[in-house]
Image 1 (cartoon, rainbow, N blue to C red):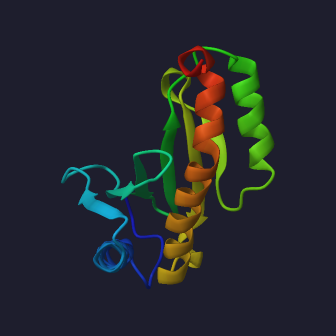
Image 2 (cartoon, rainbow, N blue to C red):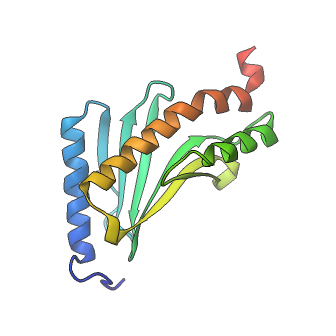
Length: 154
């Protein structure tokens, strides 16, 4: 991977992201962990684990690409019931989300995903992303869960 941005370089972005996430974790009790991906990964990754209220744990994966910072949250496993209604509800919520969208991922699980150009990345924007993903997950999880696994709640 080559450094597209000069300055800052990808190494400088990587150091900033690590510092910002570590700072957030030190200042906010909802942060349970901030970890790095495996050394030698093609793209640097971070895992941020937050303590939720509606969803016990919320994990955000950040991946630093050559031009963007990608992020995603695993929201829900593949629905067992009301499949079309679950996906429709998620798609309808997309209209109200800023900087993220619901997507169907591996094994038909439901994810929140987004991407930010590195030219827009700063500490305040990363903080907004973490807060938004936390909020979107907490707001949508209960109703999507009840719909996706309705027989478990009767």
